[in-house]
Length: 483
DNA sequence: CCTGCCGGGTC
DNA sequence: GACCCGGCAGG
Image: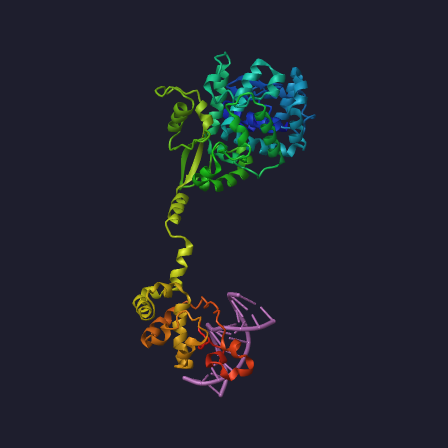
């Protein structure tokens, strides 16, 4: 009953969505069962891969339900569960048990609730996004056609066929393949379908399971063409697995948010809202090629299709004919123009590190001449003084020094002998000092680095406190042993 | 913890 | 302005 409801609600009817639904369900429940049913009009077509038979028929739904007899057994199962039963009846039980069944059980281990398609939805999305995965169903069809249940199960050959045209067989089932492709194509064009797929980790153990299954199936694939799919596993379940993360990041960064958002909506989308509603004003839809190592991004679907067709599929450039296969290799990408803009703008400013110093030593602006002048007096080059943070403060101290002790400072020059700019102080005109003083003070935030020179306190000790410079006595910056 | 010294207070 | 000191921060 419940399943029935679901099916109906999914508007399986004439719309591809129906197939979509089934597909999802199949994927979610059966995981790698790879069965896709496409229903067109009243006719029903069933594609099976290996042991599993995936049926999809709206018109006959009711009757089928009855026929199947109950969901009781798979009460926890959604359509997929029922499907399994069908399979069993079909006499493929053995295969089922050996292969997908286990998975199925895991997926459906929990009672109904989960069946509402949440998982299915996400899976579906994933499939649509991933060329390899998408291809899987198609290949399944083929396999199913041949009724090579056992082998098929063992050798999923997920994407080996679809991806490479040459593998296609002009068999009478071609139309079915095309149909499947069409279905997937239509699915792939829906942003909601695409993005939710990226629901990477979010999901659940089920998702994991699914991936595991995939990995298995892929690895066992006889076709080396799509070996990259296996590698894709390493790449979460992101929408654009074929692409290297780093690359896609830059471009899709703005998309990530949406992805996460959609993830939460996947369920909703599943059964109701096939129309993307999260599109933002600033969002621009682009089409990104998912072919491995290809990051072609075009603004039009036709463009990307052409690209795929000609570049990756090796189709005739002139021919506009499309069997929909290209759709497996590109995905819709929402580009947040604002984000992009921001990102670019953010690149222009110099690194933060460069911004720090200037403020700290503003003198260059207002006192460049001064500092230069000062340095001229005591040094060959002013660079050192500028570079030395102590320079300005030193001047400042000098001034205060005068305030505190006056000329005494001169003497200490010889003292420790470690002064870096001893000569500067004495000769620095008061005027300049006054000008310089403000700067360092303005940057009060920066505390003058502690000097290495011993101070009066250290030199004379507490016993001879009277010998300290007044500054030291007053707990001010030592004027005698300036750093 | 020691030390340097800033910031602020008092006289 | 001279003097003092609480308290912060680097080492």
